[in-house]
Length: 136
Image 1 (cartoon, rainbow, N blue to C red):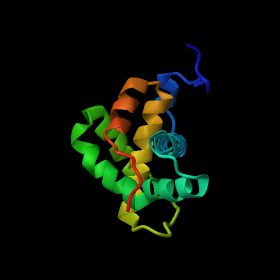
Image 2 (tube, one colour):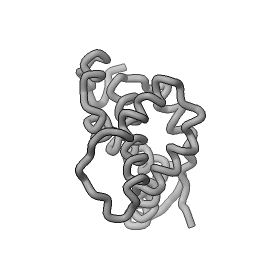
Image 3 (spheres, rainbow, N blue to C red):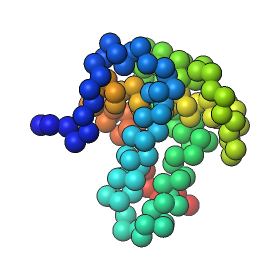
Image 4 (cartoon, helix red, strand yellow):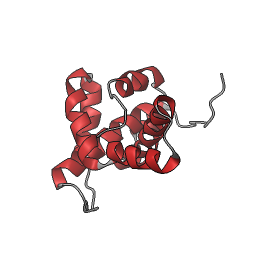
């Protein structure tokens, strides 16, 4: 089956990219996953969908999710997470601590890396560990 969005880089090229580049695309992939899950599991109107999605894509929540799934990651994936966490990012977080922001970036790095290297089955497994539903 042809991909909806073509990923043209091979794994060798992806590995040469900056972890912040992986995080850049990982942010999008994760947000799309959250939005799809909310649409599939609820009948919320767009504004409420947006409000619920924000709860999952903010740095504090992503940091919590990463800490929860960390024991399920392979050694290679944990290395990707370390690289993302330690990447020098000059962005100062508004609504999160520096540590939460670092862990959120690490989470997005992992998601982006798996997406770009076309490890779709593993990406699905990891995303499947995250229960997305309206939060109180």
